[in-house]
Image 1 (cartoon, rainbow, N blue to C red):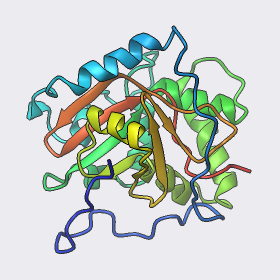
Image 2: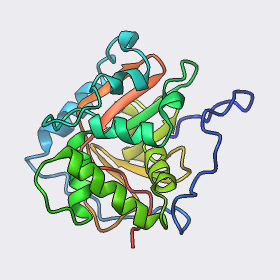
Image 3: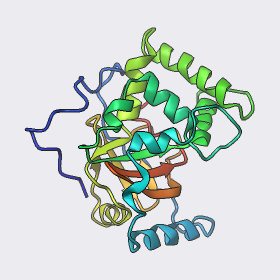
Image 4: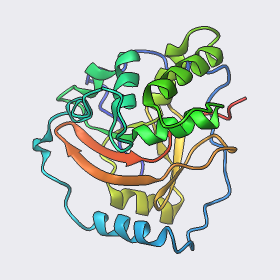
Length: 234
């Protein structure tokens, strides 16, 4: 289900051009659908359906930015929090937009392990070190951005944000009806139960992971185990 875009009269919390970071226009690229018959993934599929039937947690958690800030932002050995995401959001100057109390946004939030996986996919050969992985990613994005990593980083982050409320049940409905979700970047994601099919055909598709369906005062957060990529990387 594609959430309704914000009303025109509301100020745009993202007042910049989308798609500036990449040399080619973002496009939807179909991948082979994951094998959902895998017994290893069956419990997570069942969990997603269960979450779709249960009300989200209380909205007393604060804004999306405040929830991400709870990670502390210090690189550590906790693979499931959002230290690297927090550093990325601050670097791209998106923290205020995600802190807007009047916004209604859904964020597919890569955990720290997701960013380390992306670094390894791009050539990082170190162990699990969040600081080293982050520095490697900055260098890689600098190369993709012709010397400036910020536009590329911003594009990637916007590809994880949807205007409106995307609940677990919406992912199921989108799967059944073959509907895409349009992100703030303008590029789309194709839900397939727990998987999110992005625009990079050569890397494994992200999937929702725990914790998912975290309700914020200005939207909702679903953790993902890999970083969504909006284009076919060179």
